[in-house]
Image (cartoon, rainbow, N blue to C red; front, side, top):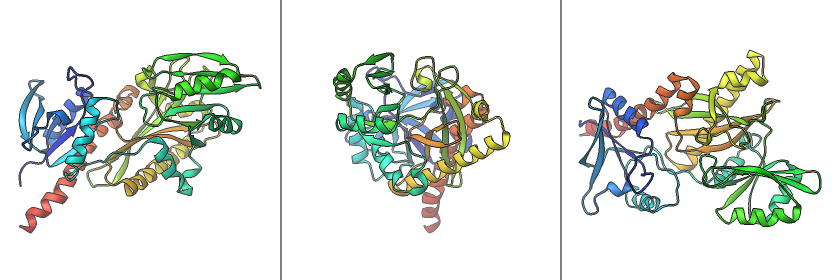
Length: 371
């Protein structure tokens, strides 16, 4: 049986072909070698137009250098491509359409609104979802803010806290808005009269499709917001497992906690202790959170076909209620290294590789045995 190959499918960040997540891929390639897995990186633009060959990016852990080589299509593909508005993303959609018959570890997940609707169908999940509606017109905003104050506007395909707007009603004649623009820059809090709110929001919505979501009270005494990132992955036995959890604390005046937006990471138990001094209480919350995240991963895989990892953004209020804010199919891993949980960081790197080997042995091992 030939050596198993795993191709990591990604996108360039810009036209200069700067590779996204390069340090992570270097570690994955090095760890893959230890496991007997040949790992290379490629983008849709690296695929030969007429031959089934890929101008792959190869990393040598010994020399610490990247080179190029023509390679055959890998046995398995690990899709790490995030949604973006670019010509490169259009190339990705064409690749997925043309080569959809290949063996992918994971398939694309749907947008935030669709995922919310899917999860809402299951009563066990419904109580853990903030009230959420699709932003069709201003009446949607006014209806939700009567029930929930504050509320958040989120682009249905946004990542990294870009384009998120917080709206809070102050009495009867004022609204306060603050957030981050599409470039992730902080929008200074400003107060608007109801007559100005509508035009502002319609102009904001013109940039993308948005959902409106109930705001969960997760501000700390210092005014900063926080939430939790829980990573669940398939392991070397093909089973879902919680890899780790970490807290993210946003910077001052930010409505988001994202690391790329300037936030910092804290061990999950350390942050939980701020609101829940009892170790028994923290343990119970952590266990309930893990079980919820695993159940959601299994449910979404049953709904959308192959998945190998998901990161869930979790809010936990002062009463210990757990809310799922977002489900991320292409999660970053640095939050664990930044929080000091190096075991979780190592597992976050290696588990997709171990799962790829399990997939390979199940598919190609059985074929060899049958021959």
